Image (cartoon, rainbow, N blue to C red):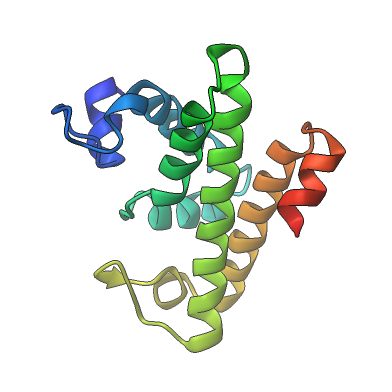
Length: 152
């Protein structure tokens, strides 16, 4: 995926007035890694994850994490940690969307049939659990105190 394709996917625009312009490179790197993490050995699970995440979304949570990291003086030395935290939050958010649609019987998500409506509750539930696991996998390498703080 090119930087411009990733930028469009994350809603980053080229002009300097965009709130995400200062972190364009980081958002593109995050998008590429996010898409790789959606893949699964179980083809259906990967398909459901891609269906949901590729279906849009503003990616506000990752944007805010990366902006806050830079605003607090975060350097390139630890940028991979910030990107992983941003991706983990997006994965958790996506998992909750899958589970929410199962709970409330949501038929539409982002203007198209929800994963629940398209794939059924059992497969969507497992896909949501898979996204949680991928997020926890990313967070597992952080210092224990950071994980506890985030969990609260």
